Length: 401
Ligand SMILES: Nc1ncnc2c1ncn2[C@@H]1O[C@H](COP(=O)(O)OP(=O)(O)OP(=O)(O)O)[C@@H](O)[C@H]1O
Ligand code: SF4
Ligand SMILES: [Mg+2]
Image 1 (cartoon, protein in one colour):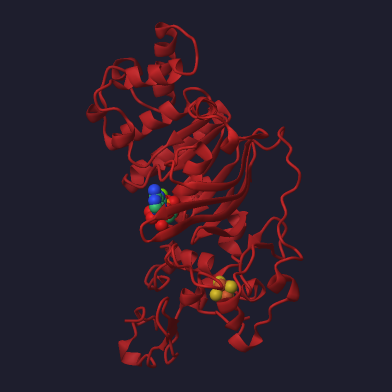
Image 2: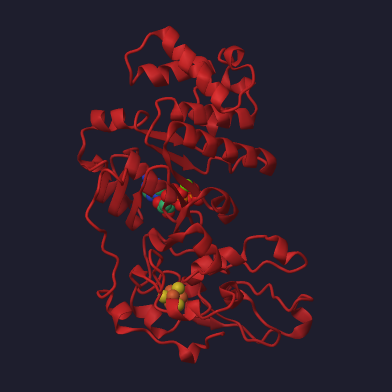
């Protein structure tokens, strides 16, 4: 079924945002390591207040991998830095971050520091800047252990060697003496993983840990990360803009747009049954074997400014199935027809009606393309002429001038 614009209905429960709204159950610290509740982050700037994170909530269970995905600037890193207490002082943070029941946001800086590195490990995209260039890899691993644990230098060095071994660095004992510049990009990323897990943390935050690597090395590093996670018995929050990577690592997925979660579900379900057009758009712009010979279907346009957010749904200017209510009311994140699957969309029921939700971004021959600009009047493009179309009927219609 392909719903038409006219067939769209908005249930009163969704429009009001009250009935069915996702309310977190009471915290159980024995089964939840980390719970983030309605996290908000704002940055005062000369141009105005940047609403970088606008209500992120999730719970993380032991050994679970939560994938956070979204376009550049959607608030993935800022929401994670807030959890780790790594944002600049100027940041205005709201909500709660419960680590085994204790609120991290209300801890003293020394308590937060102790949590970081010991209970929460971190892996960043750029290992070269995260590692200290003038200290050997061994010295940095030893320091990571001894800043949290009173053990001898020899014992810490032995642990460092075990960790390099665990992350697949050959001749680990000798490589402890190497400096970061003597490692390849993949080896540096392995060293970062070793550093993140050397104190056997409960949670690892991995922020785009493989983005700078070529695909073969990327796959190896992801395998290593998952193997190490099982070895040290940790959960992972894995941040990426790449849904392909998410598919290979995550158990659950949280899709972010303009600082907010717009869809959450188990990984298989989000790929097979998206309920939010933005997720469908991301899926359609992902190269897959099924699409060989076909054009990808990228989402046109760009995300809105986080200083002057438009009223209504922030995705509306890019959404091919927007209706009037989308301009006036921002949809709350609600549970959909599937248990544990939430979406922030007035039309999730219609999205569910598509056989292939990614097709809503495809323009058929002879179809008129209407796009809405963020800060201009609605723009309707002229009818697409067949000779302007690719052989598959797809189009490269751009955003409004
Ligand atoms: N210190 C700061 N002051 C003002 N704005 C900031 C600051 N740090 C981040 N931002 C803004 O917050 C928003 C979210 O940034 P964030 O780094 O979380 O994006 P992201 O989803 O991680 O993107 P990417 O995929 O590019 O890493 C962006 O608009 C960014 O410009
Ligand atoms: S709520 Fe947003 S995503 Fe859903 S149909 Fe409206 S504009 Fe599209
Ligand atoms: Mg980021």
